[in-house]
Each structure stands twice: as structure tokens, then as C-alpha cells.
Length: 179
Image 1 (cartoon, one colour):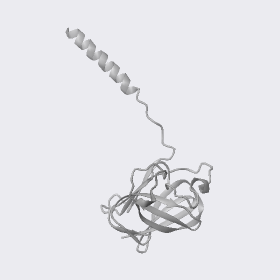
Image 2: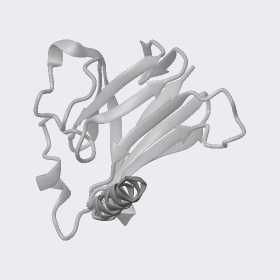
Image 3: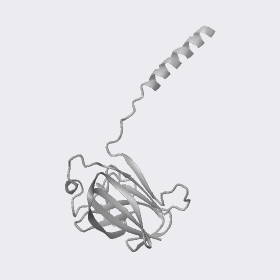
């Protein structure tokens, strides 16, 4: 009986170990997830804003086709961008309460509309609901001499606050943020 229990335990362990080692892991995402935090220093405990977003790449495609002017864009890839304001702030001069929001944009030639929306956990802009908009502001768009292959978000300190800068291809969009 003892040998039978030992044999059964061995067989169970053997089967279980094959099941575990057969686990399939997906490859790297084509549009990897990234986070942009301000202030960026890990030593600063009082963060103002954190953006979690996916970074699509041009791969020979045009920005105008990927994020057409005049249409709501998910502002990246995959899930809608998630923005956390750790404290009350002003974006583009408008007040926004501390909290978590989805962020969408409407591209334009010289300015983009940046939208902070209360509906979270959205895939892309497919279920975008304008009635859930909390703040809509205009942000200036410009062209840069260098091209970015992957969509990126960074921060640039300016007098009176910071600009959240959205960049892709040669387009740069600067959204003023202050406390």
C-alpha cells in the first residue's frame, strides 16, 4: 500500500510538472506598455501625474492614417490611455480633480483637443462616450525636425508648471499642466 501511494504521488508530480512546463507565454507586445511620471525622479514622493499608455510604431505608415485629424483617437495603442492625477491640477488652464481618467485626443493641424474622460478600462476609442468627458482642452501642435518611430509621452518643465508632450513622427503636442 505504501508503495502504491508513493507511486501515485510520483505519477501526480510528474504529470503536474509537465503541465507547468508546457505553459505558453506570449511574445513581446507589438505596442509595448509604458509609463510617464512627473516628476520623474523616484525619490520625489509627491508625484503630480502618471500616464500609462501603449507605444505604437509607425513601421512605414503615416501618422495621418493612424491618428486622423478631426477624429477621436485612443492616443496610443490597445487600451485607452490611463492618467492618474495625484492631486488637483489645471490642464490647459482648466481645473481637474485628483483621480484616474482615460485620455483621448482629437488631432488637428495646429492644435489637438485633449480629453479626460471618467469612463475607465476602455479598449481603444471604440466605446468612447462624450457624455463622460470631465475636461476638454486645446493643446498646441508643432513639427519637430526629428522623427519618433514610436509614440511617446514625456514632460518638459516650463515656467509655472510642466508640459505633457505627446510625440510621434515629427508631431509634438504640448499640454500645459500646473498645480
